[in-house]
Image (cartoon, rainbow, N blue to C red; front, side, top):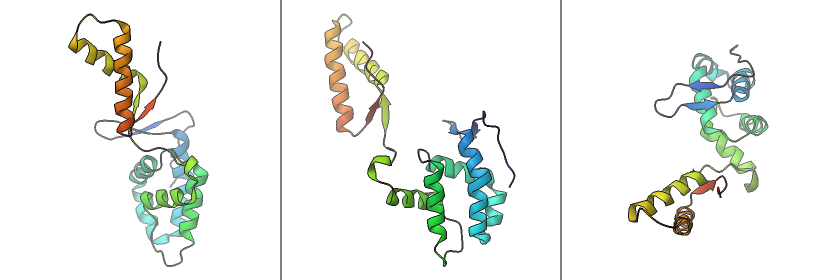
Length: 163
């Protein structure tokens, strides 16, 4: 396993629809440190890890997005302490180990999110559907309703309000 990427590269792994991005730093960490570590801890998995490195990187990169290399490394080493385990853990198992060990404040949000700009556009569209000539204050009131709906649904609104 000698896959290495230059530090200025970002790997877009072929996924239909939305292209999944794995940062160059995460790609290098996966290829040069994590996969060899797992192959050493679980020799029965070394052929699968080596022959399917791209698929492993895709799965690990997408499921562990938001966690840093230290958190991933510690979780893998913790799972490696189980002497009865013969095969490398799946990314979901590592994610669960990280979540179990991490305080709630450091856990990345994985729920749905929408930008403030998208909410503003929703409000404008709603207002313009009702009436083509409205004051700006009507749009502001509609935006407040959109934000309340998103909050009620548990959607995180990112960004800031343009004024």
